[in-house]
Length: 454
Image (cartoon, rainbow, N blue to C red; front, side, top):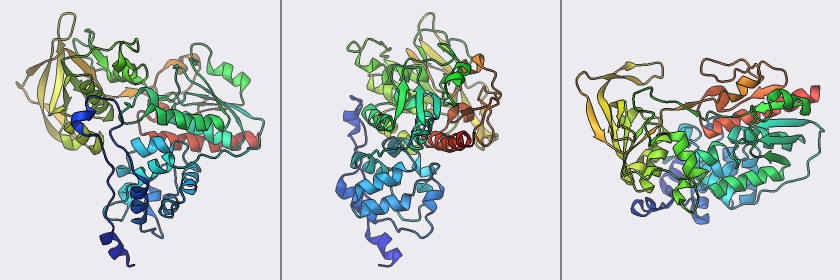
């Protein structure tokens, strides 16, 4: 069949989703993924390009053409095996990776192949097989069990190294567990993939705060190398009056309380969170949209305020669309001046903005419109304007850091201290899950080669 005829004949397979009116009352996953029939049909739409441009857009380097062909042939175990050669977290990435900006962006099929949904299908419908691995005798400590740490640990284990991951919180997964809501990423999926990594031989020690219980220097006495993957979990604030009022949350705290500590099930779980009548969320990224959608599910009327226009929002279009369907109100070209209240939040004062010339990010700079101040009544404010690296580890060992306290590394992920490496958000600032996975895998290969050379 001619390639053009193939494009015209085969229709895109669309996954089913929960109805918006129903899903705002639960925390179940919004998207259901593909059925077997849908996955095979979607995979058969792939043109199997001789030069697959999609693969150049994948930070993890997955052989996309190959795994999709396996699905088309109903060889699901082989499809998953192909993915696992490059990515130990396919169920996660199939849900949260911005495929539209990466692999899918370069796809020449029309409509573009839903690569991320096929990856999710393979993760859910095939077996993760673990083979015997020859041991090297080398020991590596990984600090942080988020995507970078898990990727580095699993890759090092596959190479035969003994790996111990130290996690500060009482559950593993990092941002996958505390940062991304259940309705976007089921915690069961996260734990299934972590259990696979454990089966590879990776040990995870919970409630282990490196920088408090012990430092990196102590780890170096027990291990041949250390990989730091503590992410970017330190929230930024606005620096305006009223941020110290009760019921002002950072998005990090708000999401952690709900995702990790299940505050949305209070009093079944004992961590409380304010169930506000009117919530204002400040920010325009995925974290802001996540916080807004969680607040909505807790019964709040939610307005998200963003200082630029919708076109400049860094959040994924898919997530914005879901939020709009769920009744989240978006107020664009507005910026907070102060939070109003005596002890508790009573409202927020903002100013209208206009867009000027592009700034360093390439987006048009928001500028205040003189005399356009206005107030919004609310009883809860969630600040979601970004986060940076936690400086805790840097206080216990003399690592070179950048202006934003990120750990500085060379092209080999080597820090300023011998045999101490770092990757993921701790070196770049807040980025994507798949970018962190890519860092972890690349660093693992470098660490393994270095230890073999002695």
